[in-house]
Amino acid sequence: MNNVALQSDTQESAAQEIVVEANLPHAPEAIWKALTTGELIGRWLQMTPTGFEAVQGKQFTYQTTAAGAWDGVIRCQVLEAVPHQRLVYSWKGGHESNVGYGSLLDTVVTWTLQRIERGTRLRMVHSGFVLPRNDGAYKNMSGGWKKVVPRVGEIAGEQD
Image (tube, rainbow, N blue to C red; front, side):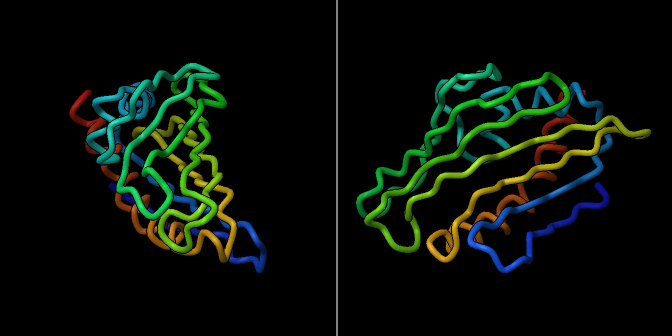
């Protein structure tokens, strides 16, 4: 894997986004399969979705560690699904009474796949972090997504 980069919006603003890009040596079809198959998502994200289908409007959830008034459920909805090109879903969790971990989170994850000469350029943007409320989630997920995106490539490689 090459060109794995972590970039973030550095403007002084209330909302931040995490951007991770990688050139992966696999066809967009293999990357798409890794991004849209529940069991494979569970392997690269280390959380298996419940009820996921790559169909616009489909609601699904992830379960993570609960905290305070938050039950640990991440509620998502597919906003856009263009096979082998683009997958967008909402990512909502937390509770308004929590501070730090488990604070209210209302964000969007966008995956963009672009065929390149030797594989696929994969771009993940997780947007909508409101700072300072989501500062902990932003920092933790910035590091997390940087590890996850290469794992998508590893899982896709097993599907080639």
